[in-house]
Image 1 (cartoon, rainbow, N blue to C red):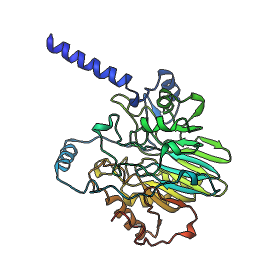
Image 2 (image 1 turned 30 degrees about the vertical axis):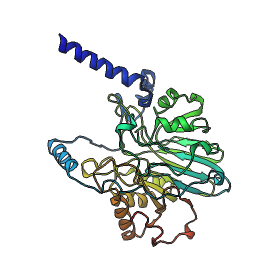
Image 3 (image 1 turned 90 degrees about the vertical axis):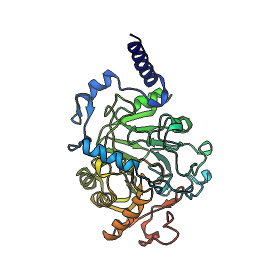
Length: 368
């Protein structure tokens, strides 16, 4: 009886913690699930990928993962904080340019047609619901003072994993943001965190929204979702297309390689710049995270002009060397004659292709 009571108390404590601790977000309501069941990409209680995507690991995979994790590898993290350029908040929204500023990992700011958009603004210290127990950000800081940010026209989210949707970052940003554009189901997290339902637009794949002359189109990705123990794939994941009168931008979100890239390229390409996932990969979960060589091919599939690799230089979430993704992707890009951009964290790039050399110079190859 004592053992039973201890187990029951432990289960109850965990359940209550998952329900009341804000960073876990909000579980999708029964009413929303009933709505989702009418959709072709929702099966029973879960969203599904455009093609079959297994994430199961057998005993051999698990044992090899454990073996690789135990290996001593001092290069999984940089030995010192990464260099960065400080962003001057006064420079934002000053010109009618298409400009990209990368904040490390997958977070970036897009200035386009006089509008300012933040994508997956995970600007916290750790991609974990309890930061003290999670992997720490390499740079220990971000290149911009969030308190001094001007009003943000929109935040665009790709999915609800902690390295893309961060409770503490949203708390700092929410009073500055006019509107949030998110895949289906993510609105519940934001509403729990104090954001008005009227300031949130949820999208299924291929849904589009207009933003003062811009088009924001939610497009497919090959991944999964979830923030807690019991909500796997209950919300949608996506990539995004942004179209203005002068520029076309593609953001891959997190995705394994698949035919959806070619479909997106045929519908909305060519793109002036693509921000493509490149990092946190492993052959054991290759269905949901691209290898760097696949990143280059996906860029070609969507008909991109300039490739800016993201999803690296932020946190250690896989077993490869921290700088392996950028070394492999730049090599693959050169082999495929793809123009690649490798900015410093915090460096702003105007998307005017003629301004860039196709050969990286010493100032660009900063990670070495």
